[in-house]
Image (cartoon, rainbow, N blue to C red; front, side, top):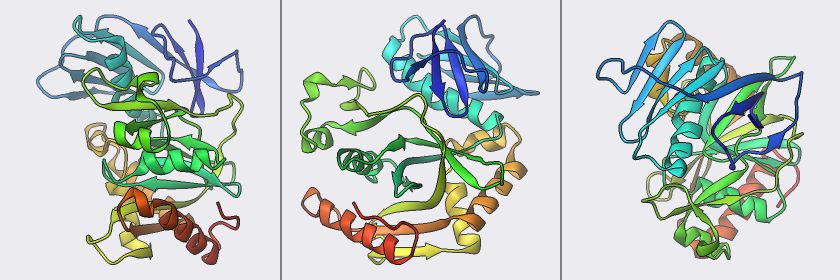
Length: 302
């Protein structure tokens, strides 16, 4: 089975995962196995837990048994395409495994600016992936799109691990960045959304996290960059957690709250309310970078 780089571990998978980078053996990283097999149904809920094992049931896709952050068994529905299967395997199922491993996944992308990671969170359609594609085109490393995996270094400081080296763009955003969508792969058989591969290295180390920024459209609150502190910062991180319903289903509420408090106390947590529209996008990003520089969060502009 091929091995793929992912977060702080290696995925050894019976299911081909072209979205990830194949790597050789690495004794320093734990191996997580993905294999095909029978997974028994467990009740009516979409997610059931028994000890350190969780079963995720997605009708028409698969049942996934995720065991203790060590393995994922996939029981594929015969009607599900390989493309659709990978979307949920590398999304919801992998998100459960990341939670089980004690890591903190945000529903965000992460961009390296001046040697530090800045994570951009926000609801679907807030422009996270478009922003990541912009930074990539400007020469910045994009560590992750959609799921930003946060861990701790030896000194207990938050770091961001590299994730899937691609961004997911709606057709209009892909065209805006000069891509012919006929040459891109859809992320799902029935969605007009495409994945764009990004430059990546299997040896990319984790990067210190400097800020978490939530994207907000102008009109929802006053425009500009607003720093959040204390309870407001913790609440933002809790709200922007990837698959937050998994936290309670796995009984991880206390640990998750501790992660949010730790990150909020260590890095800048901000709301960025910006004007909307492709015609003002570049100017808004440039203004954001200037504000981050002024706040000493980053020191080199785009």
